[in-house]
Image (cartoon, rainbow, N blue to C red; front, top):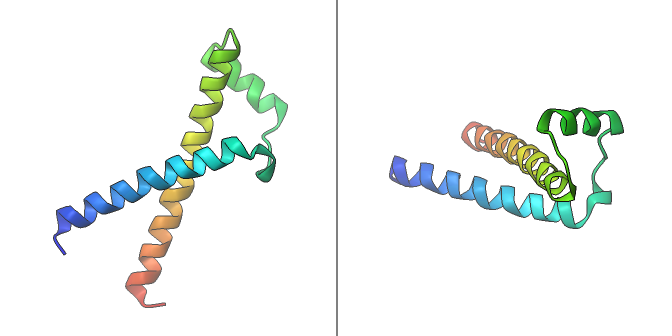
Length: 86
């Protein structure tokens, strides 16, 4: 398979899987551990949230970021196992 096509498919997989993971996390927030209240207060101070809409945006940014890292780590791990033949 062409190297560019393979890279494009991995990027597409990462984006789609990140969006699905984020959507599931936001629809079922009790299925994942919660961050401590002090963490959210710290983030709100850094982000400068003033109203509920900005808090929702902050929550979306946090879930997207964590979902992206999770999908990326799982993809790299699966790729490493695939190449080793395990």
